[in-house]
Length: 202
Image 1 (cartoon, rainbow, N blue to C red):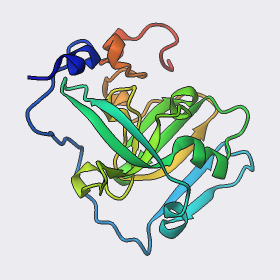
Image 2 (cartoon, one colour):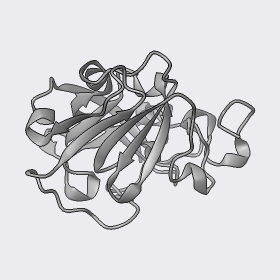
Image 3 (tube, one colour):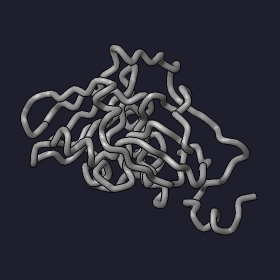
Image 4 (cartoon, one colour):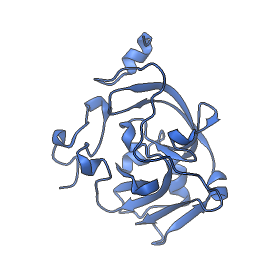
């Protein structure tokens, strides 16, 4: 049973499971550090694509975040300690154009999730490389996954390979397949039919 402090942190409809379930779409990719890169493209301030090799990305300043993690399938993992590169640090290294309103985060195999720029730029949004003081396991997104703890976990894309700056919103992989465009667990924004006007693109 979760302790009372955990219960007060649980969004509506969530529960704390035994163990730490792992869910993902598709197979687990193999990491090849010599060819890995992270691309920032779309509406960048310079108008050009910026690429980080694995050594370059690994050398960016690190930050840590302790946060709960809420899956749309209704389980929550509490008090995770993530370490990696904050989204704000990435934005400083690869600035967006002033007109950017949204971000698309791309993972391996074409998986994607869209975020409002305000969600992407929050202090708690992190490109995580470690979980609980250990490198991420392959199943949890090694070498890099984005963690957006204030939204449902499908927005926390594993095996990140690119960030696309957008001048208008566009639905990502699960959003195109019926998930809510925003994904706020405290408002139980699970499915597209729950969207209010303005929550997503037409």
